[in-house]
Image (cartoon, rainbow, N blue to C red; front, side, top):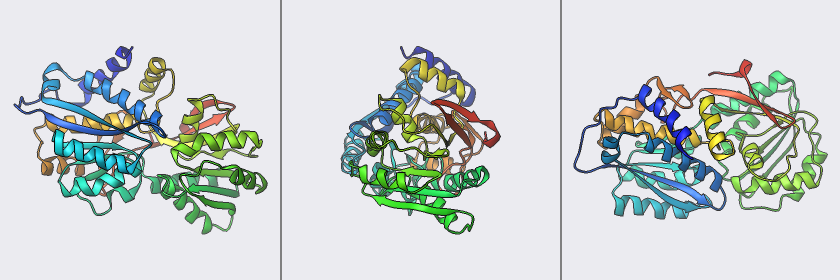
Length: 367
């Protein structure tokens, strides 16, 4: 079943990376922490599929010299992530680390940084890399994305904004930036804004308030485990917005499209990385659903470490310098470089939704 996706991944590997990997007696170990059960399981499972395909595309000699170790956690738990890190570091002796999600990454980052373990977080939250040297963010930067979304809202001429933001959500930075810019713009009105605990699942009161607020564009920045409960509640209350709803980074679309929950929106738009469209179609054909956010970021993060090894850069300092000075890397989510702030200049595009159909708006694309 995995062959079609693996084949196209193999083509990218062959065209973007050197195939010369020095043989070593001790394999280079890449540790990965993924939430495979509970809240966020879909994201972790999709990321694992991408990793499996990426590893399968390596040559037999590379597979001897590079070992992939995946440590599962549940519901994006920060406590589980710390336990997983100690197992990967203390028992498995990993050389580098990949972690999916802002919460788990924030918990692990100080530990891996103290141990000088190069670490790529699949997160756009800048807080993950604050005060670190060996931690990098591999996802669209949430603050920059907030500015991108704000300009899109302005161009479309919507005036009444509503915000529902979960505390400690990975999208807090994005929604915070949009709200900051909106507060400075006299042409825009914030008609609804509320924070909700990230563990709260009964969202009926919030949906009712949003229904009465007269919102043009709703910015839904909830924790992954809150998306389906909110969608179901909104459907029950017949919550509709007059104009396109802003869907954060597409989490809500991903969760609903991968479930039987009815959509409560008719139109919408959201920014996402410039993922290779052929890869997206291959993933859909193989797995029966679209790849979740961060799926191909996880693949690229793995391949960045592989490429570093292929170039003989294996010490923590060499790998850190390689990532910090990365230039024009041709990945699955576009061509990008290091941004000088422990992130990467990942290009954006806008995907629009109308009556259940998804379309890439190429007039709003940086691909």
